[in-house]
Image 1 (cartoon, rainbow, N blue to C red):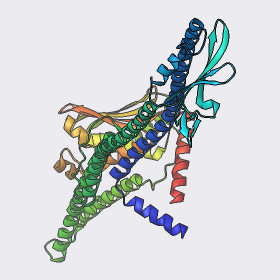
Image 2 (cartoon, helix red, strand yellow):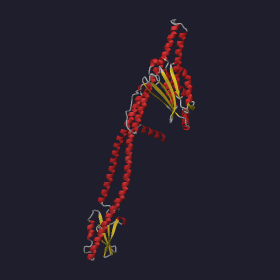
Image 3 (cartoon, one colour):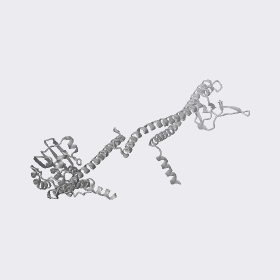
Image 4 (cartoon, helix red, strand yellow):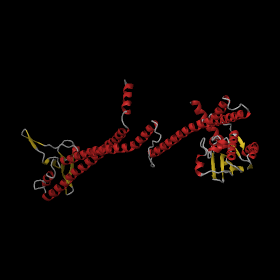
Length: 486
């Protein structure tokens, strides 16, 4: 039964809106504050007020005793007007009683005397704490006592005092209720203002979930919710861009695959129909397109595996100058066959922690790209050591690149000159592969150039250090642990 009740309570709370929860929280805080303040103020006020009223009654007793003592000293007895101040004191405030006793304790004056069943009785309280007393002195001797009290009050509060106290409590209660009402209004307004941007984020998320990738929150500001909205918009923009790239990738892949397939199909059909003889030339054409198709599929698979982290990097300490020298040796003949000059400018003792095969492939792709876009001139490969990064730069004197093209050059299947590239066998995947390899080595790649002047692609990889190796190994270990948990 207890569990069922708890479940029902949780369901009930889950159905309450966030605005209502925040509003109720404001009201509860205001109520708790009011209760605490009311309790503390009541206690302090009560103590202070009782002290204040007792002092007032005591002051009346002292003043009356002094006045009676003066008149007694002048008259020499009690019956020549010495008790007149007592009568005046009882008239100062309604509900105040005054009694005068002589030195022997006999009652000389009592304004509370009344007749009950034919006998005189006094209404003076018996509890000494409810009475304020003062000694009557004449010529330095105590000749009597003045007693002052308030009818029906053990704290010496007069009726006016009691009314004032009650009115004060009523004012505090009213103030507490007013504070709760104000808290209700402010809480509701605050909650509405807080929930509004959250609702905008929720609506934008729902629209994106329904397929509208253009939905944005349009929230801006320095507070946490505005920053959340900006982060959401950035994420949505990234998702939309990725979806566009995905669609473009699908189109481009289909187009790239169709080109060699159409060439193969048309050639084979022509040979089957007897239009072409299945000679060496025709078979070479088919083989060339098959090879091109194979290279394209292989490049796409390699890029996909890198992006999915399914290809394990074999990290080790690499001398960049020696690594690139091996690439220069294997590409020198290829570059010369294209009518270009290959220049290599290495700096010694440049070490990085990397997968040598991956760095070799990235550099080879850059050299191939430079050759493809350089009709004549020089391709220069430079290795340098910076403060934090090692750099591998491949420069050419080819057609160059504009600022707008530089922003798209690492996108898959993008070409600055699609027709010429395709004719020369370019796949449009090589630079995307370079960027992915460099990213997985915690580096970055930069492109610079100008139209008809040439371009420079520079790979930056962190220099080798024991600290970087440990950090890299810890990162890989955590990634492996996450993979195993999945």
